[in-house]
Length: 337
Image (cartoon, rainbow, N blue to C red; front, top):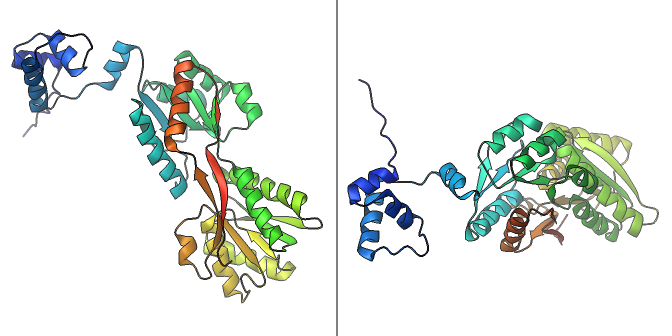
């Protein structure tokens, strides 16, 4: 048996069923200002539209108005943490109140012009994408399509070179806050963990730089050691074994809470007392911090009021002006480690 897929309803179908012109349907469904249409007719058109399951075509609307209400967010090719999830959820609500829709685009490894063509085909007003996905040629293609680019994690000098706006998490400030805390607790031999995974390593290096800057500023005589680790219990155990053999650091910044949780387990398995022998700090302040024993000290990134970020994004799009946004502030959450 062959099934016939139903055709989506159009304004012509609504006009025929309601006994009005297509122009009247368009005026009613778009709430066109100044259109003198009796309320009874408006109600009849809306009722027929609901009955037929009519949904306006976003691309057609964009072509008609010359603008798009879509902000395309290209997801990073890594597991998304709770901080990013909360921020995107709040940003989506903030943009919706301003008449825009945040569309999340699934992970895809293409970059440069190939990626830019795929994004531009959706006709967004703006694209939010990681720095590793952008090239000068790709940005130029988006610019010619009048699509505003917000680069995530792009250093200021590169953002200026590309001519893009930025949306940046303050990884340096986060690391600095962790470093200040460890120095304040009397730590003088501080180990900092950087993820081996390519996508996360760049963020880890910035957090490492933040720890180093804080130690240089606040901890005379203190030193920082850099170590790499995979996100596995085996890698954490191997790293702790290295510390036991080389000499235990007295303070550790574990990149984030998941890495720090793995390290906490490995330290306890090696009969290393936390925090008596080794102080430990994570980042993100996820629920895991309160589930572990001892409870994990962490640095939380508090976001500004999401509506403010949404307004600044929309203003940049409408005014075609480059802006550089970093709407998070690092805050220490001290617990037992």
